[in-house]
Image (cartoon, rainbow over all chains, first blue to last red; front, side, top):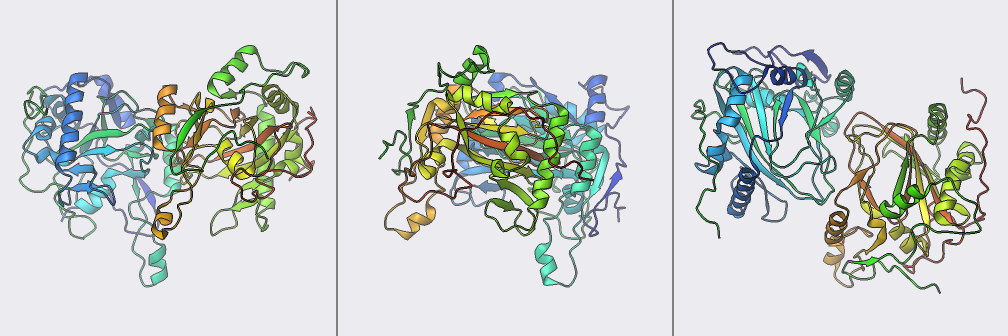
Length: 311
Length: 311
C-alpha cells in the first residue's frame, strides 16, 4: 500500500501543504534535452512553459484538418470516450486519441514533444490521458480553478507529482476568447480539498459541493503569492507544457472565435497509476491509462495527413 | 406617434442596419467641452473612451467607502431597486442612486462627468438610469453581448441613439477578472434581434430564446469588421464612457478579485423616453427615469464622505 503523500477530500476542511516532489526531475543517465537552463528555471518557478513555434503553420494546418476528420468520424459513435454536444451529434471532445493507430498516435510520439517531457520528468514517459477538443464560439463553458493532479491522485491513483500536460493550440488564443489561465508558482503547493461526504443528514449531502474544488481562502493565498494570473495566449501552433499540479482554469468564451486543441498528458514511466487514493474503483481506462503501458520511443516522422487526399 | 427608427423583436429573423443617428452631436450654442478633437474622433470611430485618471486615488477611496455604506444600508430593504444575492441579504446592486439626495446624487452632477456627456450628446443631459454594483470574486456571472440601446428603445421607448453610459470603476480591472469587452465600431450598426413571440405552439415558446439577444451571424460580422475585441482594463478610478448602442458583454470572473463600479447613463434632454416601441407598458421608473426630468447643472463640489466620520 503506497503512502498517500497528498491526502484530499478526506475532511470537511480544506488545507494547503507544501509540495513534496521535485518540479524538474534530473536524471544523469538521460541524454541532454532541448530545454535551456533558463527554460528549466522558468518551469521550476512558474510551473509552465509556452512555446510559440514548435510546429510550422503547415503542420498546424494538418493537425487542424485531422482534428476535424476525427470529430466528423465520431458523430455516430456511442463510445464513452467521445463527448457529444447535448442534444445533437456534434462532437466536442474525443479521448484516447494517442491510441488511434493513426495521426494522433504518431503526433503523441513526436520528439519535439516527448524530449521536452522526458527532460522535465527525468525519465522515459508514457501518456496517461489524451484528448482533442473543439469548442465553438459564443457559448464556451467556464472551467473553474483546479489542479489536475488532485483528481489524478485521488480518483486515478497517480502517486507523485511527476507528470506534465501538453496542449497544442490549433486556434489563435486571445485575451478575449477564454484562454487557459494559470497561477504561476501554485504547483509548489497542494490544496487538499474539502469534500468528505457528510454522514447522516440528507439535506447536508444535498448542499455538498462538487468534489475536488479548491476553497476560496487557498485560492486567494495562491494568487497573492503569485501577484498575478497568467494567460496562455498566442497564435495557433503555440504549445503549452504545464505541470500536473498547477492551479488553472478558464473563463467562458462569448467571442465568436472557436477554440480547438490537442491535449497529451505525459507521465513518468516511474509514476504509473496505482489504486485510487479515494479507496474507490479507478475511473475508466480512457481517463487514466493502466493497460499495456510502454515507454514512448520518440519519433521524428513528418507531420502529414493520414490519407493522401481528403477531397 | 414617433417613428420607430430601429425596429427590433418584430420578426423571427435577425437583421442588421446602419445607424441613423450621429455618434458625436455638435451644438454650436454649447460651450466648448473638455474633450480634444482626437478624443472625439476616437469616440466616433470606436464608440467608447477610457480615462485612467479623472479622479484621484483619494476620491476613488471615498467612492468605494460610500458604495460599501449604501450596500450595507440596503441589506434589509425590500425595494425592487435593490438586488440581493439569491438566498442571502448581501446586496449586489442598488439602482437609482443618482436620486439618493446624498453622495451619489452629488457625484452624478460632477462637472468632470457631465461636461463630457454634454459635449458628446451636444445638449444638456439628465440621467435615465443609475446603479452601483458590487460583484464578488470567484463566481462573477457572465453577461452576454448586447446593445443597451436595443433594450432602452424597445422596452423603455428611448427614441434615438443619443445617450452615453459612464462607468466609474472602483477596483482594478485586469484581463483576468472579467473586464467589460467592447466591439469597436459596433455602435455604427443596429442589430435588430429576433424574438417575435411565436404564435400558437407551446413547444415553440418553450424553445424561444431570451429577448434582445443578438444573433451569431451579426456578431461574427461586427467582430470581423472590428478585427478585434477591446477590454476596458485599468486601475481603480478609470472612467469608461461608452455609446448607448455599442455591443458589449463580459465573461465570468473566477479570479479572487471582486469588481465594483458606479454606473450613470446620461441621456440627452432632447431624447427623453416615449412609449416603449414594443407597445407594452414601460419598465419601472428605477430602470428608465420619466418623472421630474430636469437637465443636470454641472457642479464642482469636492468629493468627500457624506458624513464627517464613519468610525
